[in-house]
Length: 377
Image: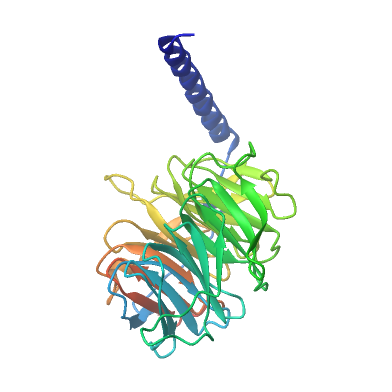
């Protein structure tokens, strides 16, 4: 068979696949007779209201000299770790704004960081394709370098995200540009399971984000450049439990809903979406109103009740607070006093939901607290 014939057959197959994809999309839309917002409106629900002092910036954490790419809270809510383009991890006391550790990384191109459940170690990964573990009890040398206590090597592409399994300091999950996720035994440094790769039910492009269920640590969600999110069970790595469609761009971020049975996504197509893992259905689309191009979503987080969805966007300093029931924006942190001066690249809520931390390309982190009459939602 000649090259021209192969190209012709490939073009025909590509057209067929695209037609099938369009038909599936239209069929899904026909089957979705309603969504959460329309149902809630029909029940007479009203949006959450925010006053001028209901969410305020109470601290600015300054110390990085490059763009902040990732952050994570400790379970006890008083410390934050951040990773930056400056090649350092900084551990902050969220109550005093003081730096407790500044760790110089062996590879400056860091993309993700995470605290261990006991708060005694931090993990990070990036373009070196390695997830590095640092013990915060280790003694730094005269240059401030903390030795790596464990290096998890096995990915064949950059490490895009890492997250410890809840209440298990010995296990964490990483996602990578090699289209796989890996469950690691931190104690031995060995792979426990690989998700994707040679398995047909795995992702077909870079995996960008993972989120582990707090109610069932055996479940985790992955988001990928193939425009899908997938549910995995760590007890059966051979295939994804379910694949979730709907996005029309890279799925940059995923986050489990507080009840553990739903999850949210944020994508390059400018939307956030809410899915139910039991039915596989899309429950709601959160899309800003505007005439311009879709602005990619960089990071999301839910409030402890799930009523609010915080979403950072790759546009200036935009961070919308969505009412998840009504599908409406109730606040834009970019318009609040003392907001960031550049795009918000990462965000996360403290374990008790009393504070939100945002990280930005302006090299700063900010801690936002509920004030006024508003408490934890």
